[in-house]
Length: 454
Image (tube, rainbow, N blue to C red):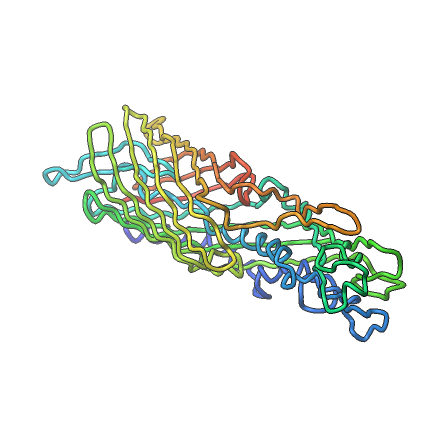
C-alpha cells in the first residue's frame, strides 16, 4: 500500500513538471530579452541611436547616438531596472501552501487525540501542528498571467526617455546660453516615447512536505519548479524639436532619417525556484483556541536572470492564532517579512497580516477563505524616475512614465476548498484575486494540488 502511495505521488509529480520541461528554451536569459526591447537600432546598448551615433557620418558633428543610453542618465536606467526588478520580485513572492492540512492530532497517554477536524486553510496558517511522527506531503500547481503593474496594463506601458543634459567646454558660447540648464542646446528637448507590451505567463509546480518532530514542533520544506514564458513588443518614436536636418534618428541620414523603430522578443525558461525551509512551534493550546510561532527562510536558489526567483535570501516570522467553534475555525496571522536588498530585484520589507477562516461543510469538504496582506515598510525599493523639467527655450515638464509612484502594498483575496479522499489524500482548489493595485499582479492565480497525510 505504501508503494502504491509513493507511485501515485511520483506519477503526479511527473505530470506537473513535465509540461514545463518540454516547453523550456535556453536561448539567452529572459531579463536580457526584456532589455532587447529597448535595443532599437544597431549596437548592443539599450536606447542607442545607430544613425545619430555613427562617427563616420560627416553630418553628425555631435555624435548624439549615446545621449539616450540609460548608463548616461540615471533616471532612464531606473525605468529599465524598475521593470526587471518588479517582475523578479513578484515571481519570488508567490504564496506557498500552508504547513499543515487535514485532521491534526496530539498524543495523550499514547493515544492520538484530534486537535482539528477540518481540512484547514490553504495559504494562511493555523496554530495546530500535525502531531509527533505524522507527515504531510503535497504537490501544488499555481498558474497565472501577469496583467498589471501598479494598475497599469502590462500590454500598454508608456515610457518617455529624455535626452542627456549636455555640457562641454565652450558649449555656452556655441549655443548662446547656459548649457548646465536642460534645454540648452535646443536638441535636448527631443524625447523618445516608447510603448511596451509584455505578455508574461508563469507556472509554479511545488513539492512540499511537513513533518511533526514533536506534538508541538513541525518542520517543513517547499521545493518549487518555475516555468516562465515571455513575449514582448516595443514601438519607439523620436519626436524632433528643431527644424531639419534631424539630430537624433535610428537609421538613415539627417536629411532622410528613420524616426521610428520596433522590436519583438520571445523566450521561456524552466528551473528551480526559491527553496523554502520552515518551522512552526505550538506555544499554547486550549480547548477552543491555540497560539503558535512560524519561522520561514526562503533561499535565492531561483535564477533571477531567467525570472525564476529573486536570487537572494528572504525570511518571515509570524504569530499564528487559531480558534474553533464547532466546525468553524477562524485564524489570524501577524508577522514581518525581511527581504534581501541586493541586486536589481529589490523589494521592501513588509508587515504581514492574514485574516480568514475554514469551515467544515461536510465530512469530506472544507471551505477556506482569507484576506492576505503585505504592507510595505518604508520607501519602495523599486524607484521610478521623477519628472524632467526643461528650462529652455521655455519651461515644461515631462512625466517619464504612466506607471504611478505608489506604495507596493499587496492585498489579496483567497477563496478555495479542500476535498478529503480515501487513504489520507486531499484535493485542493483555490483562486487568489488581487484586491488592490500595488506591485505587479495577475488578474487571478489558480491553484490546484494534492496532499497526502499519514
